Image (spheres, rainbow, N blue to C red):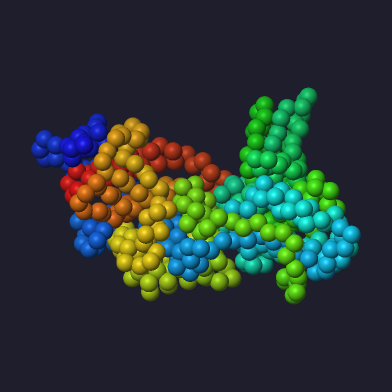
Length: 472
């Protein structure tokens, strides 16, 4: 076992802040002053069983939650959708199969699965072939209206970042397309594909052109069912690849499915969008996603924005992100006694706000509901970290969620000692003035952003070490 003093020594080594006595924790104010973050820092830590606040500083200051908003989204989805919920993607037919030909239309119908990938569509095409289908007499349609279409999560982000895609009821590869380039003589060979682990179908509806210019890095235009990109030649180097967002996800999924079906010997025409699921259509093939807790666990681990927005929209039934975020805020107040403002479910929208005491209230209140145990089961084990950010051995477990925006960083969760008092905590750091001063182009890699984030995360680790040393 490591003593409280040992925990503090490991995590706070080298901190230039005064201590009150040998082994005593430096004050929170000293740690914050040493971090030199600017803007606002607020935190709250409470007894997880009783909700009694043990320590707080600016705990009532509402700050951007960033991706820690996904904790509330998880609770919202667990209650509204249920632990057993699975998203399904189906191939429907409006007529019987005769001689290998569907006597009618085929519809690729989504229910919003945020984790549907190319390999899943490959399996779906294989199942269609196993059902004896080789062609269709009618048309090929995609149904993507099970959730509202939203062209991007946040309008203040650069248009080429893959974490800000469109959302619909038919999503593929987190609604991203892979752009790959390599030197080819005096120019570049480029391709756009929807790669999975087993299948790498090329994509025609997303197109890339290399142009000679200094800036911007990328341009984008959607027209006639296609997505046209250009990229600055000077930025490409010898070769590489990156994921770009897709803004027409239904037709993207349709084209990829058409290509995968062709590999199975199934001829389909180009996809068109269906306004509704045909009445009386039969299911020819289906792939189902994992149970909700597994999806939430990966969402919290990898902080996938598309997954969070799908969860929120499916739970609220609203027609847009702002309305859906508002519905989640209303639910949080009615169910958990929490006051907050959410403009989405991922935390990407900069206008969302929650105070540390409110997030802690949510973590405490959730334990008295059926959502509490599933939430703790899907939260990530963050571990205890040393001064250099590396994990250190400790009997104290920390589970929770991080959140990052430009010049905004959050950390929320539970501190779980091997025995004794469990604690719920929330830490928010934000320099919103510095963030607001960024141009749209700077928001992918803002000047000074990495150094600021390192200091914020170091401070968060130091505060957790302080609490582990004092309150455990």
